[in-house]
Length: 122
Image (cartoon, rainbow, N blue to C red; front, side, top):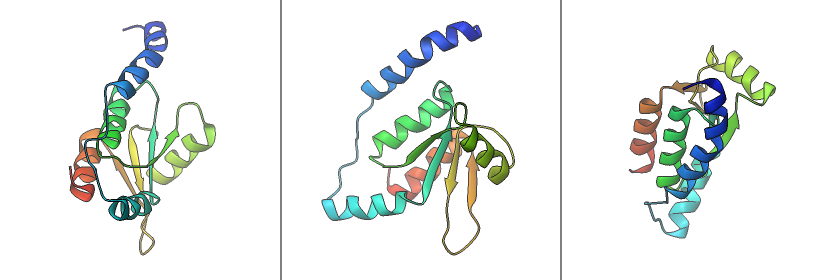
C-alpha cells in the first residue's frame, strides 16, 4: 500500500479498531483500582497507523487497562525517549517501569500482548 493510502486510511483504521473492540474483562472496583495503579508504571510507545500498534491497543482495550499511549511518530520527545531508553525507534514498545530495578523496554506486539495477558489475566 502506498504511503499516501496509508495516511488516508490510518484514521479510519484507528476508529474501526476503537469501535470494534470493547472491554472483555470486568473487575470489581477494588480490583480495577489495583490494576489501574499497576498500569501507572506502563507506557505504550506506538505509531497511530501501525498495524502492530493497533493490535496492541485493541488488546489493552479488551483487557480493560488504562495504559498511557505515547505517539513516537508525531511527538519528538517520545521518539527520543524511545531511542534513548529502548535503544531503537521501533513500535510498538511497552515501557515497564520497575521502581526496584531497571526499566524494561518490551518490543514486538506478540511479546507485549503475552506479557499483558499473563500480568492482567487475559
